[in-house]
Image 1 (spheres, rainbow, N blue to C red):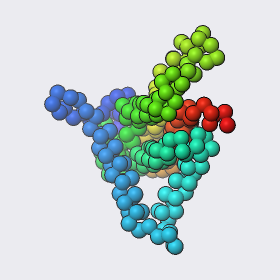
Image 2 (image 1 turned 135 degrees about the vertical axis):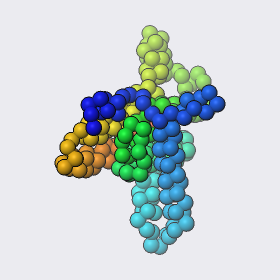
Image 3 (image 1 turned 180 degrees about the horizontal axis):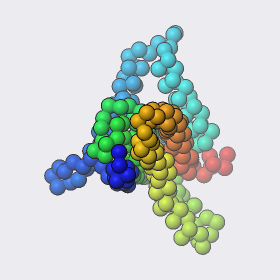
Image 4 (image 1 turned 90 degrees about the horizontal axis):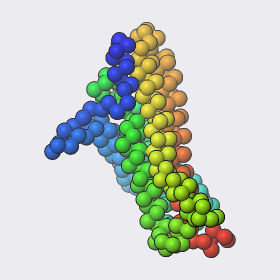
Length: 245
């Protein structure tokens, strides 16, 4: 592999493009997203079919453990009754992002850039922005429904009207920071894979295996952080009296 090829592989924004009805779509991101979603839905259906209250299997125990941890975090942060849908939302985002991040270890697809792995969709900033906007928009909609427009947005002028511009900017950058945090960490993994590809074939396997194990750990941490931040953001929709309590 030449230096020129490596430079092309790590170029930001380069994707396998599909041109449909005048629209340009990132085909590799769409394929990876569909695969990750299909795996998650398949695991859920498999677990539902094999559920056993007396002798739960490993998959059932995994789902129950994740569900319990998410419910505990939501209850401690905002109370499940405040917005019950936050539990399945945070759990689904965590599992989807985790599976999507771990797709990079599957040598089942050759990307146009020459990579040997199914690219993690979170390495495309368009997906991370979409996930972040989903969380932030739902947060604002839920906050207005629970506390009313004036009650929910009163924090923008707290402790005084002088803080309004700063608080507005903070609200605007929330989806940006949430998206770029996930994108940056996952995209850096694809850069490392491209750089490792420059190693001589005789020793390529060693750094590749080591990095893939580390990349799996990073993928787990980033999925956890995204799910946790989702819960923390939704804590702002809690009614004032519950917050004081």
